[in-house]
Image (spheres, rainbow, N blue to C red):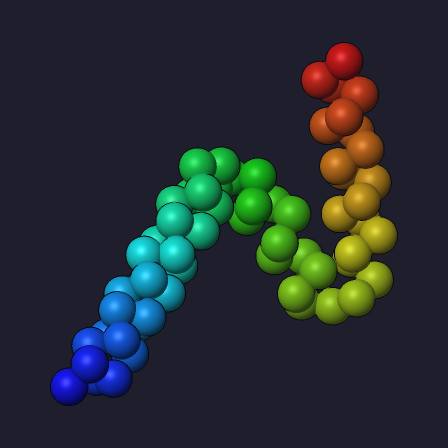
Length: 61
């Protein structure tokens, strides 16, 4: 009985953890969309992603 309860509690913990992560990701959805999608399509666009992130860095300052 206690073993089952422990496993259920663990699953609840994991679920709340994932929800926290998803929430933190959705805080800045546009940025994650811009930065995540090109690298997933093909590797060369990963360099473009770093270039755009450097450009946004200069914008901030």
